Structure formats: C-alpha cells, structure tokens
Image (cartoon, rainbow, N blue to C red; front, side, top):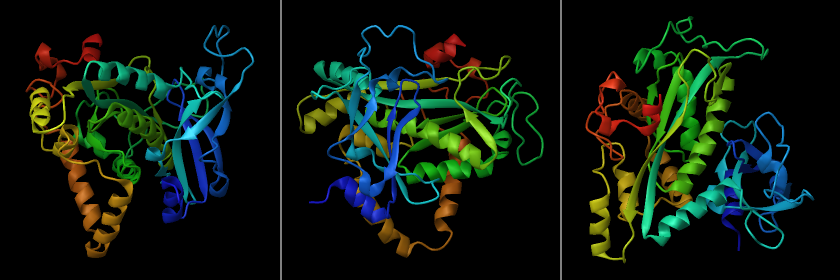
Length: 367
C-alpha cells in the first residue's frame, strides 16, 4: 500500500524533498535529498545539538541537561499531514515537517513541536481545546550585503522609499503589490490560510494574520509563512526580516496570538451547543474556520481538495481565479472585519490608541 507521502510525490511529480524541523528560533533545519532516497519509515538523523544552535550559528557554553555530552544523533520521522510543495523551487520539490525521537523511541523534549504538544495535553486534561490565531509582523528592507551599514526601507513601485511612518496605509501596501501577489500564491500552494494584511507603524513594516484554528496546525503554518515571506522577498530584490528590532529608532516587530478555549464535552448535539457558548461570533472572513472548530465541518483532506481543484479547473474560465484572489486580497487589506477572537467592537480604527482597554492586546500594551 502506497503511503500518503509517497502518493503526494507521485501526484505532483516530486523530484526532491526537503526534510525539515523548526528549531527554537523558527529556522528550518534539516536535509535535502532526492525523492527516491526519502526514508519515510526509517527516518533520518540529525545531531541533538541542532536545537541549541543560535541564529548566528553559535552554541551556548553550558548546555546543562538539555542534551547529552556525547552529542548523540536523534531520529526524525515525517508527519504525513505536513507534506506540501515548495512553490518557489526551480524543480518539483516537496517539504515535510518531522518529529524528533531518541533511539529508544522517546520524543526529544526540547523539540518545539513536542513542547507545544505537552501544552495541548495540559489543556486536554482540563477538557479544553485551545483555538489560536497568530499575527506576524515583519519588515521589508533593502538588500544590504554589508552588515555594518544600517538597514533601509526598500524602494516600491513609486521609485521612492517610504517617507516616515504609514500606519494602516493602503497606498503604502500597494507599493509592493507584486511581492504580496507572490505571497498569496505561495501561501495558497502550501495551504497557509491568510486572513488580513495591513501596514504597521514602521516604514515598510507589515502584518499578516492567519485564520484561527488548531494550535499545532497554526504553529506549522506560521513556521512555513516566515520562510515563504523571506523567499518571496528575495524574488523582488528585498529582504523580509522578523527580527524584534531591526531598526534602532523604529517600532519593533512581534507575533501576537489570539486565543480562545473551547470545552470538549461528550460527543453529540449537546456538545456542539456547549462549544458554541464558548466561541465568539464568526466574522465574514472566517465562518469556515468556526465551523471546523465546532465540528460542523470536516477539515479538508489534501487528496479531496486536490480532486476538487482539478475538477474545478476544467470549469473555470481563464483569468477568473486571479481576479477572485485580487478581490479577496483588497478586501483583506481594507481590514473591514467584524469582532473576532474575543476582541472588543472597536476593530475599525485608524489609531490603535483609541481602542478601549478591553480591546488592547497584551503585547500592544507593552509598546
């Protein structure tokens, strides 16, 4: 019987595979190999110390009990639910996120996905199911090959860099329309569900929100989105950076997480009614996600979705898909959203300082 991953390789003509894991900083670590060499069952090996490597390639002087002094290898096993195409690759390439184990079968305790699973287990013990939605902030900057020089905002379609701060400016976002067209296309190819795009406070500082859902799935999407944003920026002769403070005199970037907890009682009609009481009213852009959270809609399977896409492609007139994406994107840019994630009703604003304190995000208060 052909596995789900192998079937995905056949359906998409995959020639190379990127076997990846997220480290503690969200950087993709792993190996690239031909598709026929991908060891789905036996797994592959990486040094345990990969999780302690910093973004600059250094290691802490004292590792304590975090890792074995023998610097042993760990075994990586593929999660079939995470197989996706790499849309920017020159030849058909797939990426698969892996889980990490020791030789005796124990999970690697400091692997980020395992840490999250432990947190979810604590929720499950109380009969709760968390629902999250991350907001990722990042800067677009001009390519800078000399790290001694300060970073500068990139030049957009107007031929000029941004003059000062352009909070919530539609025109400032439109300066980089070709870049965001690639972002949306890459995310669609990887099943990354984007909700809203806005311009943040800093020059060429952007924020993209993901549609809320299960924490592990959203963690994988956020991990892949950061990689996607960087790759798309390189296509347009820019850098995308998620550093907390890339500009000394400009606002920093963060990742805010909206969280709700749904009680998980016994199955049946009563269970759905009790869960409804704990969830906020759905908005126009995320009804499908609410239905999935309530168990009223099954998450789309990759094979089923591919079949629907192939069937719909035969009926779709040329150019219709591109027009629909463009319309949806500009609706999202406008940020005309109803209340969601438990926030107050003051979501239509031009100045975040006018929001009531009940609607302020904890990270925003720290600013």
